[in-house]
Length: 224
Image (cartoon, rainbow, N blue to C red; front, top):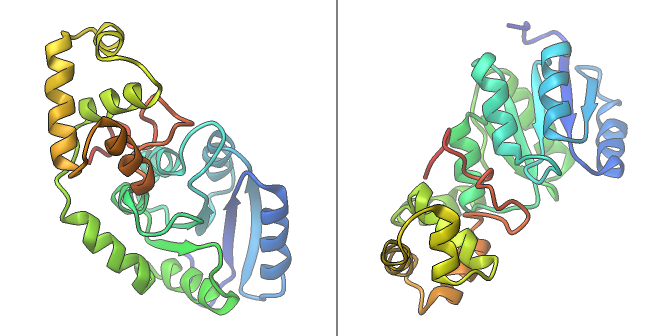
């Protein structure tokens, strides 16, 4: 573990170069923090972590090749002591719950002020958890929701892509009656009016993304 008085070595992961440059410019003025690497994809994040072994990683959740949650899981699978702070535009929805379950110690929104960001980096470096009150409140609300199973999420993703029950059954190699049963459970768990409303709710809560129909946002390593 790096001594508290030493320089904190930081890895920044974000697919927008301008965001990374802004963070580097802001943090470069801090004597106790040194940005040792940047990454724009999940794969680059994993490789950069293995190469540089940073003390703290700032991780975006929306990456072009995989979710930030999957990147966190992959890093912590071989480096269980890795200290990660999520820095994202997503509030306290299911994505934040997945990230914390994957092992993130901090969770910040991108409009967080410089002082709060620096404080969080220092606290996470010490092994402490930091989650803003507004995110924690939203998390508490979602924790009371009845969780969808991995298969239910797969079914809902297929429905979101515009597939009929028959097509969903064919794609997932199950019967059409099984798909209908899953949809009844999904609608009930999400308190939705119908399948379209269920998709809308799932997207809003971050249960899955239309950009990733493989279920990478929740994955089998961190089911809900």
